[in-house]
Length: 101
Image (cartoon, rainbow, N blue to C red):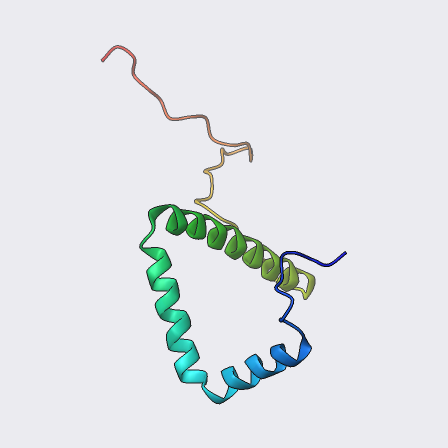
């Protein structure tokens, strides 16, 4: 049974022709793609969905790169402000809050 998602005329020959056209007219094709994305981003629903998808991909990529650096021997710096420690090495108590005010 043939796939209904792709038209029948899209085969390897057509794919090679499309790729060759894109290669010969790279600037024109890049401009076309850029204009298409700009037009799509005017739709608020698409823009929000794209923003969410891009953020997820970026977080996954950053996590992957971080794990690669750690695997190569990189020691990451601690995040955030270091906690104050008491004289015996225990964490400092929470700041005093005067409840009578």
